Length: 223
Ligand code: GRF
Image (cartoon, rainbow, N blue to C red):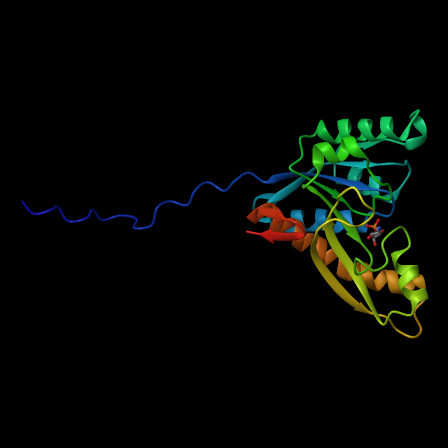
């Protein structure tokens, strides 16, 4: 007996239901324009399409525009100040606990000006992303823009990387280049870097969330 002809109907298997949007906790210390760029992109394309949603915003200080942006977006916020704890370790554990309570898939340090400690890295190592306003490994630390300018670098930029236990030393995910102009001062240069940085961060976080990734030594492979 001949095989029955294939039934008419969809020839392509139904698309699997999109994986849920990944959960992001964003940490800030200042104006929060990088946070805003993430919020704007997610609002524009939708969390499913972007691959991630922000579930909470944390800070190490109060009364900053970064927290105000989160509140305007209707997001829960939390503050853990170093000076409220007896030791840096206790602060680190409290920060880790607060972040953990929102069950993030990824944690994004978007201008968060504190170095996290052992406990935080034990919980979020390999899924803690930072953005730095220089081309690492050049000019790590709190004054990446000023240091590049003072050194006389002709190009600088920004680096999105995973955080490890050093200062801006973790595996690099992506970088953006910005030319230094003769007339630049720190603030003008930083503003131009931040334009590139915001786009890069939005792109990188979305790709990590949508595609998944693996870290092989110093190399980050986005699948
Ligand atoms: C960014 O340039 C970040 O790399 C640096 O501080 C800036 C934060 O800007 N550490 P914002 O708070 O996102 O506007």
